[in-house]
Image (cartoon, rainbow, N blue to C red; front, side, top):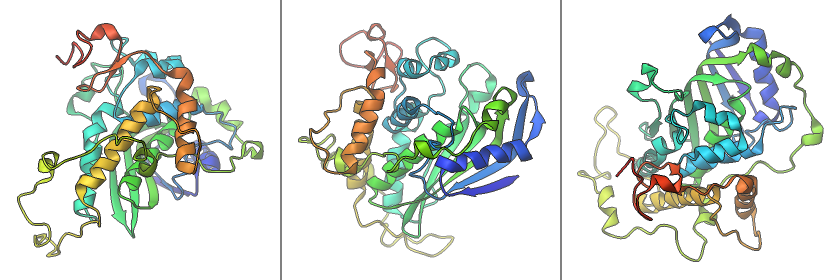
Length: 357
């Protein structure tokens, strides 16, 4: 069991590498030698700087952008991921999809998280579960490494935590930290809150022996210093288009009806009233849904970028759009399963794919 506190991942990634090499014990799951730290917790003080850009790691921004936008958008596009790195195809069971893709699994859960935190800012129920009971059957090549994500509001800021059963320092950490913190920023923006800390807990934090030499060559490289933090999507920019992406009306709000009064309900175990956010849940969920739709459009190359960039919110959208432009696919998004699939997987021009029909 170990805990490391780092200010950012831009340089702090080297601290994590040194920890694994120094503290890790040798184990060989599936016959592959690794150094492993059991029950590793990493506390990231500045979640905005969550990509190892100053370490010589040479992590690909295209992978980071694709995974972050697919997670936030609640979609999975295997062909796009294969475009940025062919190795993604190794984990597909059918050549079309990734069974363990996070985006489709958390899509609606994220909306419920935002609603929950709006109704009760001290809630401990804001979580999205990725792991499913049948994962351990071994029937798929793509078994999720992440068990769940959770968020809470404390001291006026949105904190986030990820619990992973397994995390590879070399191949996973750079992209996992980036994607999960971009989701943290999106939820915070929807709630109109600042971002707190990010906690990353892993049952098996490891490094394969094939990557030992690569880690040994890591060093702080001031030549790759980024003058501004990496981007994240803003609810303000997402809602500033000529037509709103999503607009809820009175009939839509039925989902938010509750059978009790939050103003007077007492929490039995604590005898305290719920403390609501200043904004109503419909507004908060509209914001996060707008952000999810924006992420989908950026991933699909369908987002109209403004000619001018008045602030960082628009510059962020341009960064994601440019990083993903070479990897836009021609598939269609099934609104039911949230997978992007080839056109022949659909029977009609609109509606669900053949698998979901």
